[in-house]
Amino acid sequence: MNRNALKGFAVDIGGTKTAVARIEQGKIVEHLVTPTDGDADLEGHLQSFAQQLGRVGYRSGELLGVAVTGRVTRSGKWSAVNSGTLRAIEGVPLGAVLKARFGEACCCNDAAAAAYSEAMFGAGEDCPIFVYVTVSTGVGGGLVVDGKLIESSRGLAGHLGFVTGPGANLICGSGRRGTVESIAAGRAIAAAAEDAGHPDFDARKVFEAARSGSHWADEIIDRSSQAIASLCADTAATLDPDCIAIGGGIGLADGYLSRVRAHLANEPELFRVPLLPAVLGSDGPLLGALALAVTRRHQ
Image 1: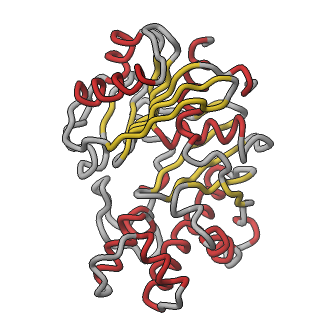
Image 2: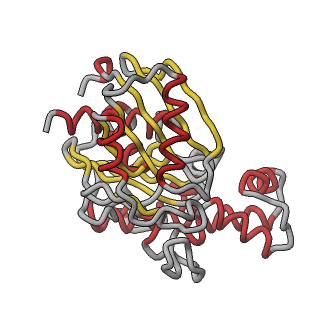
């Protein structure tokens, strides 16, 4: 896909913020971010981002890609997965409503959209089998093989944070116990800080404390990075990717990828898949959502 030919609009609905963008020649030329209403139903989310789309120049019928946190089935039904983030979203017909209201529009998971953009335009351009892992508020991902995003009927493909991880025994938002997300994600890091006697520390403050030499904070960050390294080794065993790109606010935090690489080096050589930093940042889901809309238009 030629990035310079990418033109249209995109939306990224996350657990805490919603972004809309106008994209021309593969670049975001207008960008608005508003808080996500965790109690909004489908209609509430649609009204909110439709208003913002109008502010960046969207007109009915123009190409639109929508990326959302959570699970999106092949038929376009959307479930939040983590009920603590989007409390009114469970099996809602996002795809059908988008097409009825906006015309030429498609929807996908936000990490899958980021994976697709990284595969097409970013860290995975030279990787026939490419895996993207985002370590942020949660842990997610996406799989792209020979330029095709791997999608599944139930929308679970790529939710890599829901595999089990070393040292994990808590239940994450998916309802599964002992997952990588339950020990590696931003929410998990903040919860571990509270258990260590620091209830006012979010993930950012834990990283700051670790950089300042606090042993308790360093241990929490190290457990997170070890779980991600284990996830990468497990991914090597199941998919044998050419590379894995690590993204997200935690995944790209100073020194985090180095920790993951150090833990992965303790695995047998066969499982030491090359790790790269994601390069598109918060633009990834927006570019990927629109790129997927272009791809699906021609299918």
